[in-house]
Length: 338
Image 1 (spheres, rainbow, N blue to C red):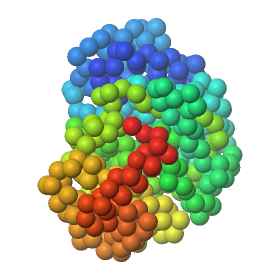
Image 2 (cartoon, rainbow, N blue to C red; image 1 turned 45 degrees about the vertical axis):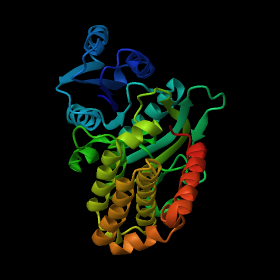
Image 3 (cartoon, rainbow, N blue to C red; image 1 turned 90 degrees about the horizontal axis):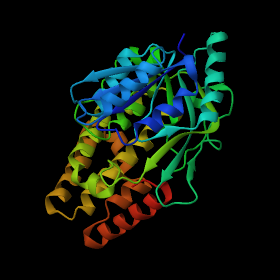
Image 4 (tube, rainbow, N blue to C red; image 1 turned 180 degrees about the horizontal axis):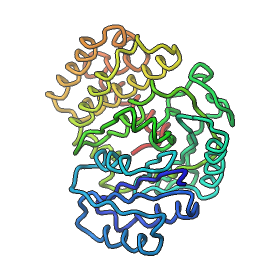
């Protein structure tokens, strides 16, 4: 039996993928590692084959035409046989001690026939040049080492949202959700972690620094200049999330609030990137995005637009845009991305 399936989407990942693979291999036969080669043009496939030959019962290579990160996740999920499913990007890695603790807990779930839909752990910003690495934990929000439900969670801070880095889903639940991430689109990790939430009934949080999120490559998708150049994809993902649910129909009040706040952050990031591009046409796109939300779900629009983030993003005139950009700069330093 495979307890956890680890999908590693790879596109021209020859320079760093081995670190990701090796960090998971310590779990041995209890896991499977699905290397999804997304049409790479370098030595990614050759490196993957080396690990398949050495660990044929653990490592699998799935070659596919290039479809982007989201499509690679889709393919990995379709091949997963483990009870739980985790995505590890090829330039990231996992902490080995934390992995063994999580694996022991997953085994316990299976032995005791406990169906836990989502397991949450901490992640660490492995930012180049930073001595003190920022750890995103949830110990002030989520009950530790017990199965709980949405109504049992506390209040999330701005820098504390559950991202792809921190979440492990029960494979069967994720497959039954019919999650399909769009092809050739960046920032779909937000869809990955947002779309299944109403299907999650039970959660378990372990206060271990599990996922190591590498930040430092110039071409990385969370680099600010890169994000501005791909702002259309950020808008597309944000609109896709707006379309997913009429949030007032989400039964759990705490989950509804969490999803509303998550959407507020997506609206903030999109708005700020459009402002910081300093292009007149992008200021029009910002207005259009807010009108899109207003038309689709007026109640959610009102909550976000007149919340702290919404008001900061919509201050009038050039001076208002400067304040918005300053707020973003502060938030960026607080959160640690790009």
